Length: 626
Image (cartoon, rainbow, N blue to C red; front, side):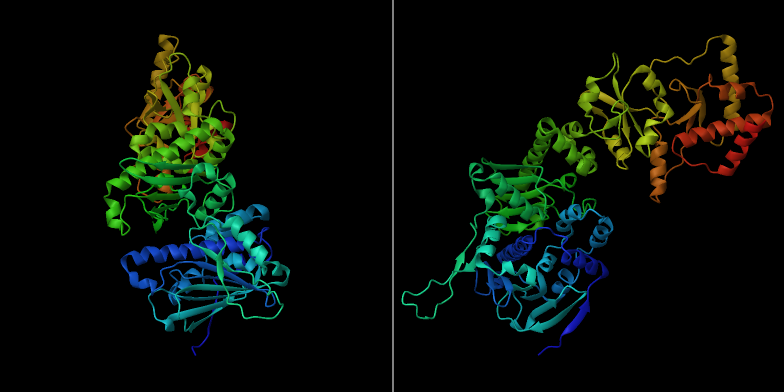
């Protein structure tokens, strides 16, 4: 007999187990759905690997999931004959939880436990839902293709450690036995288990079996009864059924299975395409972001099937990265069952399916935005920044994606991003040809920018942007519906405004002021100009269309990247009192104080930092007290 090895869970797992055991879940029956879902995945993986290696079936090709119970012993047992696991896989997949996300999940947990519980499924902890109802869990498994001597038994009471030992296991697959807590004994019941299976797992494509209840003999004598298994679920792939035969509840439950989510989806699209390429798609828009949404290398959420045989769930060719939040299945009738990743990289059928699926998702979003504004607002709040990636990645659908973008503007009155580009165009002032925008570090900074003063005066709406992706977004979004985009922080801004000079004498004074400022600030600025955009502020910094924006320079430096230092252009409002005082100052030293303070204020208003804050304060104090 092999020696039992005791191991400790990682710290994050201990914390998560305590949350579960202390009733983080308000719906304990979900444990069965999660374990059956994992068993279904194991069967899918075996069927896929066996396409190229039939020996993995070990003479048993009929895949199934079996659920049994012992009321007296207070146990529930779930078995599958899927791919199984070896020792290393048990340690990796069961001894740790969602290695990249568990700590992030723990950090996100707040005081609203009802809200927190809905996040659990997004962190790959479905197996650990067993501890909602169980005081002890025993998992016995052997990977298909390995000898019987390579079986593994894993046991834990969910108290910070687990034991491992090698056991003989003649059959492949995984068996999980739950020793129920006393307050959860109701699940050791035939009717209770069957009702939960039908409620949550009826759509699972593999048979879920339970033992038939033994019929009493007519004469009352005890007779030996051979146990007989019977299928409990429908076991028909949901997406193969007619839409008219599927209820909204069934669609929702299938999403929870395929998306490993606890909440209902925002919307779904179920379509069968026939013609040169035949395939069926069932695609969902989630209402909650998975923990790894910003990991662009994470597996996709769309599963690829070929004639109802699972192939893979991370086929990059099925959905572009900017739609990585989409969940669902695509079942092709044309691809070969032994399709490889190499074939997927250069397959016209997949290209056609991908194009059609992207159109389907974007159409779903269009419909949601048009007909269910509240739902679309929820979608945008969760996935808006990801959708923005599509503007630069999907040239063919750029215009449609741009139409789905939402913004806060100078007229929206809050930082809620709810305004579409079509709405902005519809509110353009007479003669306005461009869509104006500003990118800042925050909504407040964007709204308070001095660059907006002339736009407020003229009643021109400006898009307010502050997400980190927005610089990248606007570098790829040059126009929409025939209207070009123009940054209000660029020097070349055509607003038909005259520099506000009234007399030749004033022009001479202003010209002299500009030249003096250029001389003092030669190392800081590329040029000094009279401003056409300032109304109340003394000065602002702008850049030319060819140069990198000041905001992008700061972003790159914050990210530790080398960014070229571009000297900005200082635009001044000659009618502001600070500028008129500077213009009248004869003392060169005091004029330099004025110049440095004017430049420093403009840099701070832009969201930048001063190279020498102490010097700025000293100069400003000298001007204030003298």
